Length: 107
Image (cartoon, rainbow, N blue to C red; front, top):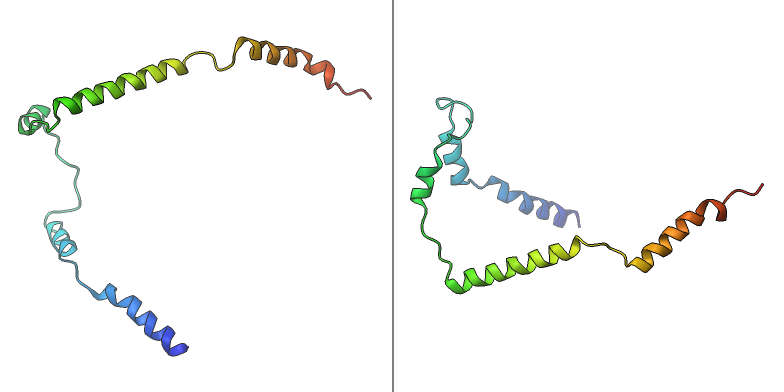
């Protein structure tokens, strides 16, 4: 049993000895010469939008997205109304008004 445990432990540690070229190249890119990690450069948005590739959305996809957005707006508008019906609100108001007398300490 001990032999199996030691063998399994050694096999589990073996991947830690592998080299990862991506990590090595990233470390080389940020050597002591280039200094610590710096903040990214800010560039004007016009240059980025000029490089943008036209979208792959088809007319059907745009229409489906617009329909979904409209449906979500309708659902959001429905959520803005009152949560309880007028009857439930009246029952809750009566229960709250009755609360101090119903549960008062009668010692």
